[in-house]
Length: 291
Image (cartoon, rainbow, N blue to C red; front, side, top):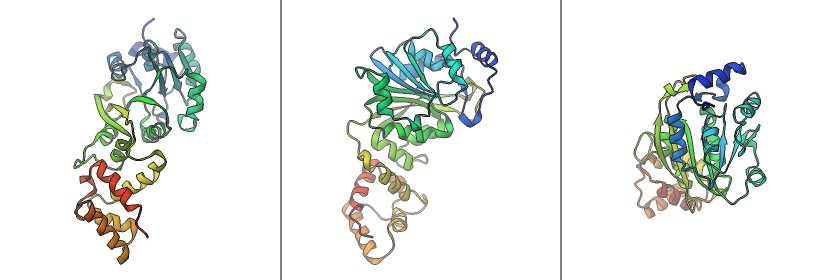
């Protein structure tokens, strides 16, 4: 049978099930097989891998993953698509589709139920644009032994994840993600290969978890809040943003000055100039500040 990904078969499936795609769920289906194969290649999927997919849609990417992986576990939130997936993926016996929101899933328990723990764990997904960041952070903070995460997302978000200090795209999201992973854009995806066509281009991002996070997982929420505070007013100096976070009392100012001097940081530097390790060091130093 023809692959699901072709424009003709995608349209036929949508017509067969009278599916009206929901913008609220970010439903845009890929219709270019070469791009799907490049996604699978970016994740280096093989029979040694168990795969988590989020938002399989009508199963185009799921099908290509199942052809190469040991097992595929797909989370689909849209109840209407469950019978569609049961039909389109019928030839494959290594796929499990759960009608569940990935954000509410107890991932360690679910994976223990469906995977044997003897294979590499990878995430490969075409993420809904409206909820990309929450899903990604949920996965990164779930303390699971991923070897990599390869995800399609809005190109602008991909640029923020992978941005370097001093660039316009560099911000709190860049820092938070890069404390947990090394991030790179594998390739860009034009909007023209989707049905329906979205208003923005996409990119495939490859995230490889660090062997040791730069900030412990239990501190990630506090660290993220700290970094957001440093970037709160991008055009203001780091000093001004720190004062807004910690206060302007003389004792506070004195403590802040000591920390910045110890780290040889110019108070007038902007947050966008700090590297990820600089943010990590500054965060730990400022835990001693007494408000």
